Length: 347
Image (cartoon, rainbow, N blue to C red):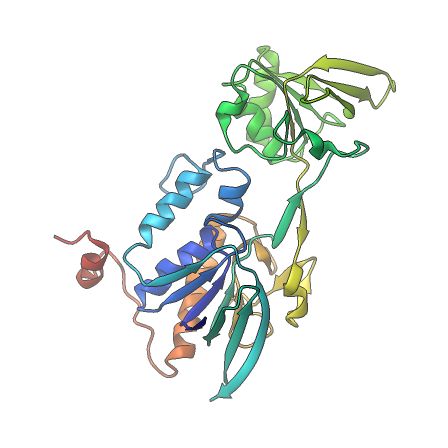
C-alpha cells in the first residue's frame, strides 16, 4: 500500500492523537501508525482505569476515558490509522529547497511518502519488569499475577499484594483500597519515589487499617499450583521469611524500554531518548520531529500536557515545510466560526 500524507505520526497514544487535532486546525492530514492493536498507547495498554488528575480543566478521568475523549475530539478531521504495524525504515528520497521528503516503510508493507515525521512513540516499545529472583512468574499470568491494572473489578473482594515504590504502586494502592478485600503494599525500603501527595494518602490508609504496609521486604516465592494462593516475603534486615495468603499479586516495577528500529534512524539520542530543539521539537534530521515522552531536552518533564505543547509547536513547523514562505494560518478556535462549524459547535 502506497500513501502520501502531510504528517506521518509514529505512535497513536495521547500525544499522537492530539497531533491529528492540531494538524486538522491547519488543514493538514495525518497518518498514524502504531504497533499496538488499539489507540491510546500506554494509557490503554497498561493502565486504562488509572485516574489522571493533571489534564487542565478535567478534575479527574481514567486513562481510557482520556483516550476516548481525544478520539472524539479528532473525529471532524481527515486522518488514516494503521494499527498492529511497526515502522521498519525511514529513507530520504529527495531534497527540494532544502526540504527533505521521506519514505517510510512498515513491516506490513505500507510505504508512506511525507515531508514530516512525528515520532510520538512514548517510551518506545516496552515490557514490564519482572520480579527479581522468581523463576518464570509469567506462568501465573491471568492466574493471580499481573503487571498492570486493566480492570479494577478483577481485584474486588480479593487479598491483593502490590509490589513497587513508584507512582504506579502508590496510585493503585490508594485506588484499589476502595475495591479489594485487603491491600498490602510491599517495598524494599520505607521510602518511596512517587508523588508526596499520593504517599501521604497511602500512609493515612495505613493508619486507618485499610492498607497493610510491609517494609523492608521483597518477594521470595509465589505459592500455588494452577493459580496463586499465597506469597512468601523475605525481610531485608532480619532475613526471616513470612508467608501470606494471597489471591492477586500486582508487580509494578516499571518498564524495560526498547527503542527498536529507532536506533537505526541516525537520530541523536540521550539516555534512550531522542534529542530535540525547543523551538519546533525537530531532531537532528530535517523534517523528523519527536514529541512526548520519547524526546529529551533541558528541563524535559514526562507529562501528557507537555507533549501536547510540544506537538502544537511542531505542527506549526510542519505546515511551513509543506507550504514554504506562507504564513501559518494561526487563529483562536473561540473566534473562528468556520472552524467551529467543522467541529460542530457553531450555531
